[in-house]
Length: 425
Ligand code: AMP
Ligand code: GLY
Image (cartoon, rainbow, N blue to C red):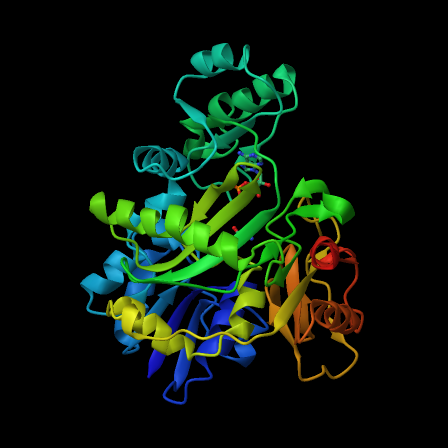
């Protein structure tokens, strides 16, 4: 079979490596892919993830048997709708279902209508009304741009002045473009965060192993928000009891709500949860695999990934047993110095030692040049180790990370520290 994967980050590298385990897979094309992915797939750097016409034309020209659309942008732009119209089976939600991530107003209203636990909120399309409301609000409060904003559309002002600046930036200065035409202002929740990715064919659901992201740039959760600086799986806060509660009050009701709205969700649905003192609540939905959650979750998948994805597409997931290894995984991101603010590119990447069998390096932001691999993005590599205990996985991931060098390399030193502490208590 010939497969196509849309995307070019660490998440896509993890998906591709897993798809390759299926013996019927001949060629995997990555659009655009990256320097490291080129070792596992045929990369097409000329075709970007938002160039839907070119993606569909490429799929037709290369007799693609199955496509995986991984990032949010092409999903929201209807890439899956277009591939289906061209007769190509694929994994991922259509544009209507992708609204669950692409519009926070849509997802918040969905949760309110169907009684799915989430933070209390108000929607505004007029900055004057938003500011009036904020004058009597209590702080901290959460302000979210409605649309996609590269994971940066959430601001948490601590007082009225910060809130006024946030509304001005989003709604008047349009720092996130038209994504800021509407905002959601919501209650600030507290508690441990858990990411749960789930395979779903619209009706049946197979949740993946839970995970914990580390979103802030600095140790001890300081500094700016990033796409994610590291992950561990499973998340020790997510007990079997909480998992059952989430299934009953969040996962199944969300799938039923999407069906009732006439836009059943097929693909990977990402539940960003907060375990609050009043029970688990939805912080956000994503219409796709998380990055870098995928880099710790997929290595623990025992069942063949392509088989699971085909069951999602064919709506036969209920008859498939999706199995997981009883192990743990940890991923440490090696980023360019300065990320998520400005950083330099083009730094040569050096690997000084062979990696042990339980360690995999997923390439996120690099490209191949005559000199070899050089950095080309903020998050450059994700070093994942699997092991029987989280402590071992973390030790092995950090030990391997130390053997990799590029000028300005930056990493957090406390990935998994909170998870380890939660395991001990
Ligand atoms: P999001 O982009 O929706 O994942 O939000 C980014 C981060 O903002 C989340 O991971 C949370 O840490 C935080 N956040 C979002 N919504 C809330 C909320 N209602 N209360 C507290 N923190 C929040
Ligand atoms: N790591 C967070 C996300 O993928 O949205």
